[in-house]
Length: 99
Image (cartoon, rainbow, N blue to C red; front, top):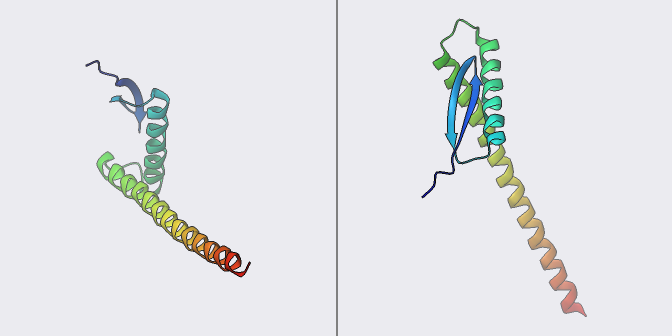
């Protein structure tokens, strides 16, 4: 079975990494750039003298918070759409039975 993984070189906080993943190289680079940006934001807020492990953990928590917020928002929107659809179906049924 051939290996369809890509080897992509990325840089995060000045450290170079070679990532092997089954995704498109452009996508891998976009993800790495996003992580790099979030880690730089954390570093700017807590200072450059902090360990890269501490910066990585805080950045991971920030990224996780973003993900959870998006999931909650999606669930809320899905529920809202579902209830609106149910209301529309009820209105249509009422109008169809009147005819």
